[in-house]
View (spheres, one colour):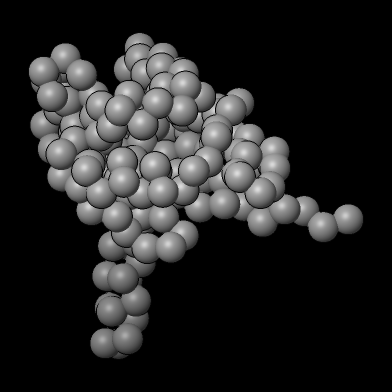
Length: 164
């Protein structure tokens, strides 16, 4: 009898939890989604410029970029890393996931923190290689500083090239 009662309670809990999980994939307000699509088009323009100072303006002072080599802490360290890589980027395109952005904290028109996920593609050329097309997925935490959205955290990966 105890087992049946326990199973009934667990079953009820799961049935109440399922709608909550389903809600996590609801599309955001279409106007907000379009704002972030426009924002990332500007990001693409800046990345394609290969201007490290312009890139730096996209990040907060305390930003973190989690790369395939590990995390890099702070805007100054990010700029130094980018300069040391000596890479040229072109054709940079971010596609915002249909369910992004996700507000953090206060909901409504006064939200100042979001997380966004999506995919990217780009062409990269180094001193001794390329150009090579790369693509992968990314997640960002963005914060609003005044009227400007800046990246506090960027996490990305590179999708392995398909083998033929």
